[in-house]
Each structure stands twice: as C-alpha cells, then as structure tokens.
Amino acid sequence: MIARYTGADGVPATALDLVKVSHTIECDGNRLPVLDQLDLRIEPGELVALLGPRGCGKSTLLRLVAGREPPSSGTIILDGEPCAAAPHLVLSRDPALSASKTVHAQVTAARNNRRGPEDATPNADEALRLLGLNRFAGAFPRELTAATAQRVSLATALVNDPRLLLLDDPFGRLDPITRTAIQSDFLSLWQRRGFTALFATSDVDEALSVASRVIVLGARAARIAQNLTLDCEFPRRSGDPDLAGTRRLLLQSLDGVGTGPSARALATRRAEPFARVDNLTPMIWHGERLAQRCAAALA
Image (cartoon, rainbow, N blue to C red):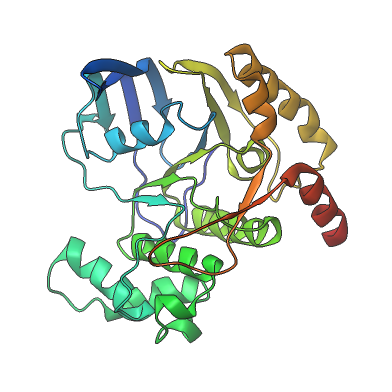
C-alpha cells in the first residue's frame, strides 16, 4: 500500500487533525454554513486529495488549516498542538508572483520572508534545481509560460523546507499534457522531500493521479462523503483499468451528495497558454475525451 512517503532529504512531516471543524461565513447579513463537523486525520507524509465541486468549501478548509482565519467551531491540530495561526502557504491556480522580480529573486524573497535576513541563495538555488528552473533564474513572470510560473510558485514554497504543503487546485489553468507533466514533477518532489500535502481539486482524474488518499466533500454545508485510500503504485494513468472502479465510486459519491451534473463537470480541464500577472481569460477544454486522446498519444 502506497499511503505516504518519508523523503530521504526532507524534513519531518506534519500530522494534521481536524476535530469537529465547522465554519460559517457572513453573506448579505446572514450566516451561511460552509463546513459541518469535519473529523479527519492526516498522517505525516500523506498526500491527500480534497475532492468536491467548486464552491463546496475546499478553499475555505485550506484557509483554516493555513491559519488565515479560525474555524467557527472545532479544533485544528498540527503535531498534537492546536493550530492558532500556522504560517502555511496555500498554492493556488494563480501564481502569486511579483511582476518586478526575477525568478531567482522571487524564490530568495520567499525564503527571507519566512526565515529572516540570512543568505537564502543556496536554498533558492536548490529549489530551482529540483524543479528544473535554473535556466529561468533571470527571467521575469511576463516571460514565463503558465506551467513555468506554477513551478516558480512551487519553488517559493519548497525553499522553506515545508512540513505541510497546502495546494488549492494549483494546476487548474494548465492544458492536459502540461498538467500531467507538472503533476509528475510534484509527485517526485513529494516522494523525495517527504512533506505532508493537502491538495484541493475539482478533477476526479487529478485526484486519482496524485493522491495516496481521496477525501470527497459533499455540498454545503460540507461533510466528508467518502474517505478512500488508494493502493495503486505511482505513476498512474487516467486510463488504468485498476483505477476505473475507483473512479466510478468517486463519481457515485459526488452524485450521492447532490452534485450529479457537477460530477460530470469535474472532468473538464482549464488551459492558459501563458502566465499572467494581472487579468486572465482562461480557455475551457472539455477534457475527458481530450485527456483520453492525449493519454493514448503518450502511451
């Protein structure tokens, strides 16, 4: 069973516990419930996919774990200690890069912001090397493709030797072929570094490709509808017959919590040909058939 990794050159990973976590938000003067009584244990070194339709509360849960706001009720525990304001970075689909800084400067600044005024150059150099970004060290965001910009964003987290990495649909803007490549890079980093990761996605195939466990969230107020450990070896392909039954089970879980049409929509892919700093108009790739054609071409 491939449940978790402890990387040979990584740091000790973090254990994460959610205990009766609920959350509500203010909406037009009313309290809107988003999360309802979530109980979850994530072991050190697990890569857990948080799967559900858009708007079900995945991003909210990541913000709570990151310490950006407290839950309305319940407790978030990291390594046995209640989490009040953990300084964890959430990586999203839109890389948070400064238009005026080079790639190397972005990564160096990320280290300095977390670790103080030390020489961050060796750490930045290593993070760029691990992600194959050395030749882009002097480039600016406007000169990068979307995939390269997302790798730079990942480097800004990796430079701080994360014990817990939170990812909010980080590859959602990429075309299917590029998305598959960067997923593979991310898995290699996870296997090598050994950090714990909570990866929010609205794509069933992505969850099956990258996760050691999949947590399905239902519609608001979200509860855990499915908690499924995947024991398939990496790397995985979307057309793998061993995963077909698991895929059907996940889609049935999503349908069972009132997301029938949305469950089919979870297979769509979004593509962005170039990185952006300001406004973005993404193209929509109707992805299941396209992904199948791409997988066949790569086989």
